[in-house]
Image 1 (cartoon, helix red, strand yellow):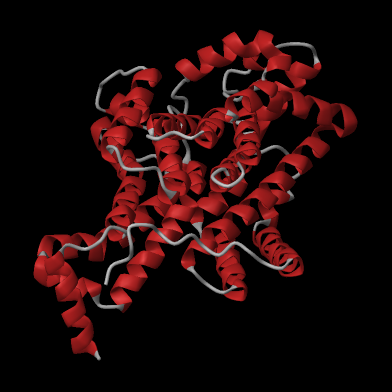
Image 2 (cartoon, one colour; image 1 turned 180 degrees about the horizontal axis):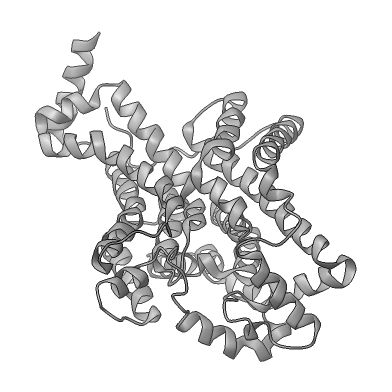
Length: 407
């Protein structure tokens, strides 16, 4: 039988000692496997841009004189403070250490969607940080996405029960790096149009805005430059995995704002008037945020790491219960899509870590290759939503008969 219309949330409660030991173990595995990137003495990949932006702030100038700096001024200001206290080494150490802790937290959070007992959940989290290509890519690229993604996901997860705490985490994420901005806008609009809308819904929907403002007001003079950078960021790398890069490859120019509005419109169309649920908060909002980014690299897929684990677990459960055999008799096309679509989508997301490898091909072909991993989270989200819906009567009876046959 298929799952109920509400996806069961993962078990997140541990004893404090159990969690501390498990978290330390996952951090240790990540540090051991990725020590080469973490201990590099010189800035690498994205890090020189961050260092330069921090140096500009330390010199009393705008961080946006650095042409690749697409982040709020808070990050550059924190970097300038670190440079004053301990130079480039302290800045890199703090940033890499924060990324290490955030990746471990993201992996543990995502592993919860596998429905495993605590020892096996931490084991799975350790495997995720050790073997996933997008994690390896993240540490070597030196980007701050893990911190922003961890804060946003934690805020959305706890926001339903503790709206102020959730809003504070989302606000901190956006003030640090606005990767989750469109996901926050999506959830806000969904909550405001929901009827009836109790006061808690309004608090949950809007409180992240003043928390975000707290991280921006001290640098109000830099906001016009930040908005200009967000409105039309440059496509400065072949590693860019975004719809803007795809459209550019097909010879089409579309403003970043238009792409954002299109992604939001499609997300609302797919949601229709369905009440907001756990799947929206933890999985749909990150997918919307990721797809709306005008500049996105492979480390952005860490934002949908919980979705990947949840889809893989649902796929495994349905195979284990032989639901696929029942579905095959009902619809061979649906069975084929489920049997091969989920593994393919998961593989495409991990393969995105190889984005940027140059090869001789027409631009439209490169754009198509970029498009495939972008569509993968949409496919996994659609699969998870469909698999969580009650089965039609003929499929439910077929599933039950298949289960009886297998006994």
